[in-house]
Image 1 (cartoon, helix red, strand yellow):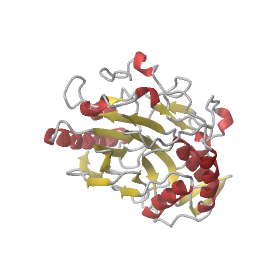
Image 2: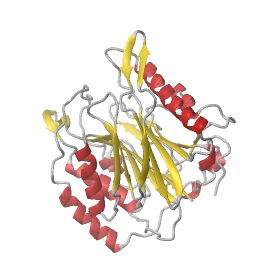
Image 3: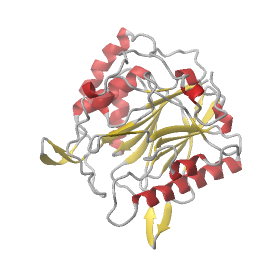
Image 4: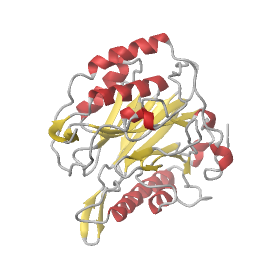
Length: 353
């Protein structure tokens, strides 16, 4: 296992995952059953936030993003005493206005083909816990949960939360019991005389796995899309400060907390929001960014097709008490062939001993 004592060193980065074991016939057969569940539309949702303007909701063709990934699966190990965690922005698994083939449509769910790609990708990894961004309603989260179960991955425990955005929320699905949930002291802030609420809030849930607690904080910070009534960079930094305040409060109360902070931060590693969230290197409350990469050694997690930009916006960070339990050789950016059909983001897998 590699060391996480320093920020994302090249040596640690080279310890990324390689292709996993071959898929079992049972998992492949179960995946076919999941497809039927995805024919049922998700429940409607009032559009309380502006619809994102993109030329098309369809993900970029997989052929444009070559990969050496094989369609392999990870067999569940009953003797495993650790945790397999996936962080994933689902790219609008919800009901919204969409533009497809230059035609506007009202109240459309995420296309079934994209949902099937999400389920295939997640099921192959056999996660114990999945933390998602851009889930719409509780019914949407339940649909995802049911489709995964049909695909052979049963995650019976769930948590759903959000912030000022009535359309996009945060969700958690877990194989293990969720023993505790919490909310930050505040999600509100003021900027240039205007009042704001953190768009997607902070998901705070503790999972008990094999007698070990994992406290998970999930976020989806303000996007890089410009705002009519404010500065998107400044808003994102304020949201990062609120998250950091919550992290500090947790670690001040118990410095030994096994804390995992993850999500779509909508900014890059050297940005002010990322530095704010991780804190000062060398201090007890510093959060270590896991040096996760794909099979080709690349670390980008988001493709913005409109501007042809590849970025690393999605991160998993851990507190000092948890970093020595990370199995670095098994952590990776999931670059399976379905990624481009599933979302504009690539999922992250972190494995803990």
